Length: 105
Image (cartoon, rainbow, N blue to C red; front, side, top):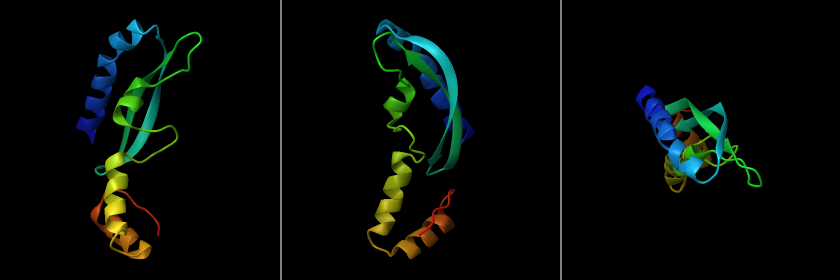
């Protein structure tokens, strides 16, 4: 998880130049936590603003992390695959037993 955190922060740093070319400026850095198939990962990413445009987090957009969503696409996919062949209660039991995060039925 620590390596994924560092990789995400490195990718975020790599997006600075490209985002500034689009007219955006760094406003601040915010922390975000996302539950992945490997467990909960917390990382820092930059928020950009531009007059007349909506503020954005390019790293979140690149990774497919929707606003206010706390689960990665892979984690959701894994849960959906199990739930397609099992009851919700058994899905919760399987996910809670075999993964690094917990869900309820």
